[in-house]
Length: 474
Image 1 (spheres, one colour):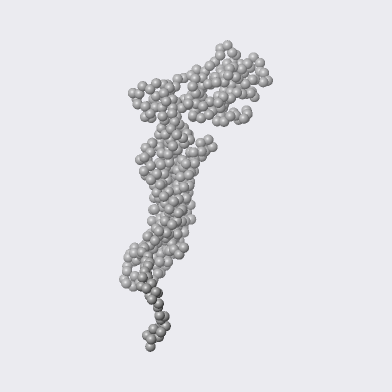
Image 2: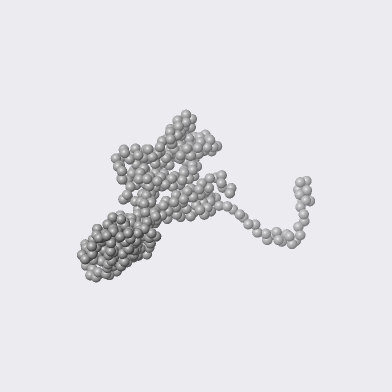
């Protein structure tokens, strides 16, 4: 009877509809089976910020490991002809003769001390350079002034706006008949403004004359040979042009290549920033996993000890470790810093892993495995640890920028890596001293620290979203 009812309810199909139904193609939609990590990688690739951060981390790894193989410049080599040079294209230098002692110009027919002391002493005229102004020396001379008992020479990096803006005082001549001066103080290939103020032998006048000078980079034959610019048998004449070594990121206050020092500093900063988190995260995994799996009074005791470690002052222990290792002021404390980070930074990871293990061990598949006779080692290695890997990776990616920033801070205040060993933090400490006149010495290491910390933080955010199963519905 059910068959008859079905036949009655089924509508009679027309011939056209029947023909169409015979040609109907059914599309079969199937989704490939994905593992946990394959699904996490697909989700991570959809996060643009995380992928860009991943590329930045890969670039930093290549910059640190492969960079010195490409840019083979000694980070400790001092180029005294290019001190504190900003990033620029390759420069040329003049092949100059060795320096010879210069005798100042003293007029025998002009009094060294004035007979009278006029109220107003005019500014000297005829201020000019003697010979070619180079980075070896700049020699000045001027015409004597009647009533002058001496002359004060100043140097500034910009055009003076008055008597109170003449710049760095270089010297004061001993008499009114000494009308020259030789400057050899940290000369660079840049504009200088020299001002000469006459004095009555005691006080300076209120009139001065200023001269703009741009010295030419000069290098002696011995220096050029030592730096490999020319061979020892070269017969280049004096006055010939030489191409100096290229410094794309400029040089620091000792003429050392900034790019080479950034690569060398990356090795130190990233060594501490990666090794220390790897070690204390590993300790936190073992400690927190052990406490969370066994639970009970043992868990309570272990976590109270973790709370005690959190309360310990990091900087105090850093100082104690430096004393224990016999590291004095001005010496690099890389090992004490590494030990302090490892011994005092693991409780955070231990708490995260413990919470994850407490949640996993009460799941039904864990109880089922126990009923089937699974041992504790099997449960930990097969079920619990794989399910905590997401939390562990996220914790590691957030711990790396924290360790890098800690190293940079300690090196900046002189507690970490000390010169001449470069690190990004110690380079920032050196760059702060010259940031107003040569900002590139601070900008480049500070930028590397900021970009590295930001990249690891954004990568950690991306991993959190990719590995957290509760976010998969988004």
